[in-house]
Image 1 (cartoon, rainbow, N blue to C red):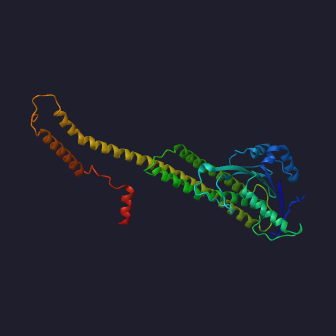
Image 2: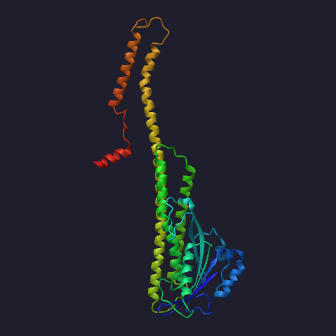
Amino acid sequence: MNAFFFRTSPNHVVSIHNDIPKNISDGFLWLDFVRDEVIHAPEQWQQQVLSLTGTLIDEFHLADVLNTQHPSAFDLTDDYQILIFRKLMTSAQEDERGKINDTHLSPTQLHTTPVAFILTEHIVITVRETDSPVFDVQLQKLKNLTLAQPHPDTTAKNKGMPSSSMDLCLKLLNAMIDKYLEVRAPLTDQIEHWQTALLQEKKRFSEWAQLLRESVALQKLENLCEEQIDALQEFRDAFIDNQFDTDASHTQPQRRDLMLVRLNDLIEHANRVQKHASRLESALKAAVDLHFSASANQTNETMRFLAILTAIFAPLTLLTGVYGMNFDAIPGLHNPRGFWFLLIAMVLVTLSLLYYFHRHRIVNRSEKSIAQLLSGEMDV
């Protein structure tokens, strides 16, 4: 468990302590738990939270915290609010700045895990997985600031530090949503890779099973964003309804407006991720449709070529069939030049048919591809 106490003064000066004070009315407390701590002893964890904060976690909410498959959701009681938000866990490599640098990130590589936020006016309780870069960065920042203070009563100017329990919750949520925004470019590159593979002519496409998994993963990402948006909207509505009292200082309206703007910004970011996933899914479906259209067009061209060959050889077959009959009296049967006359007639028939097909634009109808024709129009 990581415990931090943020003491706020009228001029928004923040003091951070590792020891949990008995009176937290002049600030707010952050208790950060790893999920394994809760899973191994859920009743003990419930009693620990009760002894440290005086807040009793409902049994149903405790089950929600333990459920690793729980979707993003929001609920509240008379004592606290609980928000479950699924954060991104990707197998793609990240650079030293925490940015995803995999240029071909597959949607099937996107994995999520729930993070539980239990929120009151003076308390923030988080339950998360062990490996969480978002929380690790925030915890390291707090620990560095704590070590930099020579005395517990020493205060430091608030430079990007949370000023309230809601502010801390929104900072963590914003960092988690930013991870979703970072994967948009790699996912776009991966979809372009699939489009190229579907529309290439020299190699037969055979990775249909993987393509289906990619499409299903994009649908799951879109549904995940929809659940996140619903949870954040309920969180915002509860904040607007003011389910728990905030301090009555003269800065309350400005602070409430700022928190509301940040909540709306989080919802807008989740909307952007959802729309991007929907666009990628549509682009993938369009590439599949183009693939089958190109395949059908190629089949039509093949059948047209075979039909032309059939039309050319049909009269030739008729001529050879007629003069291959076993009759004694056939005109030109005993003529020494009969073979050459028949061969010349067959060549003339063939040339006549080719001229007819060419005149009616049946042969050489698609000498240029659509891409070449479009590029030619652009050059003009």
